[in-house]
Image (cartoon, rainbow, N blue to C red; front, top):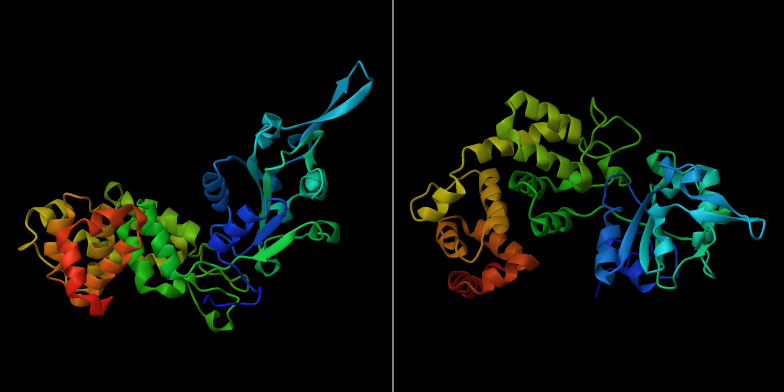
Length: 358
């Protein structure tokens, strides 16, 4: 049975499911900066097979929402909505009003008809019955300028979205397939980079966002969003010198995070290449440092295919049992790699032999 938190928080996946199963309800997702709230737009639209519209509310003026157009025949005016909303297409949509609570009051008032249960509209165009509208914003305690008035609050259902755990983020990163293994390995070793400032025990956590103090000289901090940025920097490190890479990482995830991640980059640069590992799995050097082992394992989950998984299993057999289990558990949870793993005899033999480790 799933743990019940009595409505305190929901995960991103729980929020997405609520949005999909309650299309007439206007949910507002509130959570700390950079935790992935906006990423739900494409995820929800993709699951439903709908087109989607991203609306950046704080950067809108009234004319960006709708404008009056003169109808000379009836001597009246009509409101024509901006094309970015796509409501003129007359088909089901998923519309996200991003950072709604940071928008100008006049803009929020113009968007209010979209929040109505009965006959929602934008300008003079009614939304299709299937169209879903949801909002995002930050927690009031984040101190980044969010505010809602009572008439807005009464039209929405506010959801406090929790930060992903290290395990949840790692699963996402592996499935995405483009996150640097060094970053995944670091996240595995330092799960407290996903902690929340709302937990009093995290008052001295140097990695995370905390509105009560500066997190670094740059103001940067670790979040799922900034980790993806850090991954891009790590993957292009061969094109930049070491000082530039550290400076960029400091600007992305803060000084504490950058210095710790640097050690994983140094591990990675000392490891054998993937081609060398696959070509000679019985003799290629096996790392001993935990950080280096983590980089190899998480990197392999993203890279293995039908032709390379068998030689990699030969190489992995020379690692400590702990790292073999980490590989097996995580690849089994990765949808794009499950068929590759379970169709490999070497992997199936390992599972049969090591069920006690799983």
